[in-house]
Image 1 (cartoon, rainbow, N blue to C red):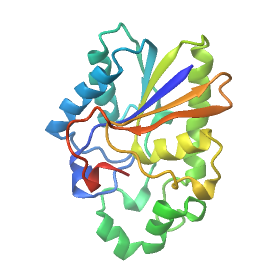
Image 2 (cartoon, one colour):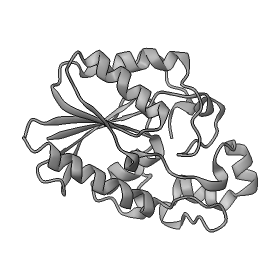
Image 3 (cartoon, rainbow, N blue to C red):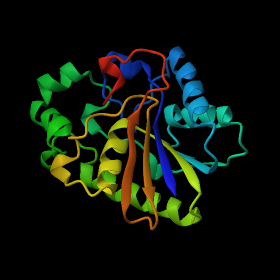
Image 4 (cartoon, rainbow, N blue to C red):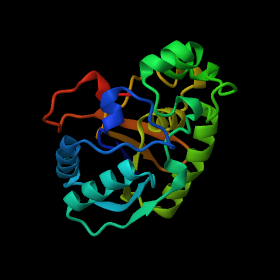
Length: 218
């Protein structure tokens, strides 16, 4: 089976360069809705059995719009384990403000996941996020056992980056080395047993007509 991971549409805080975790949920930008249509049109030729999404509004709304564009009768299930990082003191702060107040934590979050500590800021570590997301992915695989049971998983940039790389067996220290994930991008993994995964496509945005900007990717 294949799992099609989609990052939610771009939001106001994404545009402003603010940390947006499970505790924050700024509005989706108007142009994001057109990009959701483009995702759905891109995937329309693929038959899906089920869609899953984080219950946070930006991911839930993205999933609803993509599913609508598929023109398939597709159930959508919300799973709290697919939420974004809980970010503690980083939530809602601009990247510049975090750089000034928590430079070590910011550098670790972006470049050294194995060194990311939350003692001063609260929230989740990379290991904690992976440990809550992986059981959800394995359950999704178990619930869709046929070889052609493709599924959609709509979630968040940092959480997806961590979880997808972990599913591929990437060491904790190297989770960020594949690069970031753009809003409304598609990353595809394939598995036969829910334990071993192969990368089919990473951060595909070929179907988006809007030019990429630095604030699109985390």
